[in-house]
Length: 420
Image 1: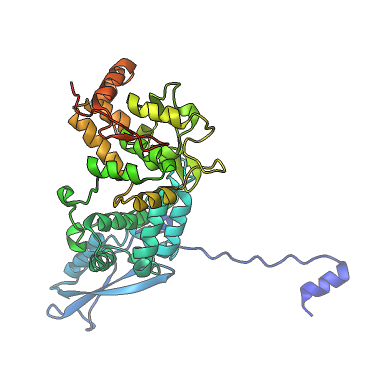
Image 2: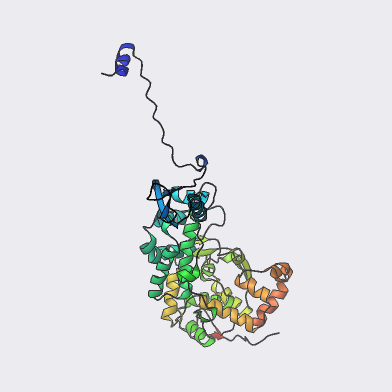
């Protein structure tokens, strides 16, 4: 029996435990930098023999290791030391950036990506919308995780990105898709920061080396509809979807914005509507951008159709029998049944073309479509606040197609050729 136990038995006093020495981890403050050591295989310096430099390097997840490099033939030992110091300085062996990279926990790309995604919707500065996170999740699951998921962050650089891009190119992805997926890799890497908020693994991405394609805007696929195609779609649609599609094509609303409309978003005559919310997967959220919160003027003929549609409605303008917003998937299915081969954004492009043909002022087009506004647009805010000015241009532009009544097959003719 030990002395401590005997003391406890005799005196009833609990022995003082032996303090455990805490192991100190790597600390940059305890380092003064290193110059390394130069050596040769001979005991005395041989001006004609090769020499080598030795120094310590940090290894992610492991203790420091000794590294040896070849310095070639150096006439003197001083020359060899100078050459080794230049190498250490050039490689940043003593830099704080290298220290933080190599001593950080051995986090994999998969672990960092999950942590990054979890932080996006709740971060204080510019929280990300669920739809955007859903798209980034698809990029990770489909293209990035199979190649990069198990790699530690320190190993994810230009070489790894090049490998991913080659696989995406072989998979037949369009240039814009490749650029979009590659951007997720960069965001995940930049999200790994130290306690000071500095990037642990800063990267200088070499787009030429990795083979990142250049996106040619003239060759990008931008599907739209013609007036004849739109007429056929409206005529073939089920009545419950007809007003919704007419509103999309006649105002340029995004589908989520249209599904989020409520009765109190319209004025009494249905000639203006306010975009205040959006619907994604059946849930309300803020519109896509700050500029998406806006007012949109509606031509009288389309306003008349809306007045008929909302006569007996409460809550959402486009809802199920239970009063919940319509599903985008169901609306898209109805469009395909009606013969459409395009998506919702085609109607938005159609509206933009109608407004351009009518020579509507650009600041009004930006307001109605919810596009980003430049400094000149912000200075011209008094124009967009002028209801009479907006209404005049709205009626001049019209909707650009013939409107089918929501309850019957009657057609209301819209003259879209009147311009100033």
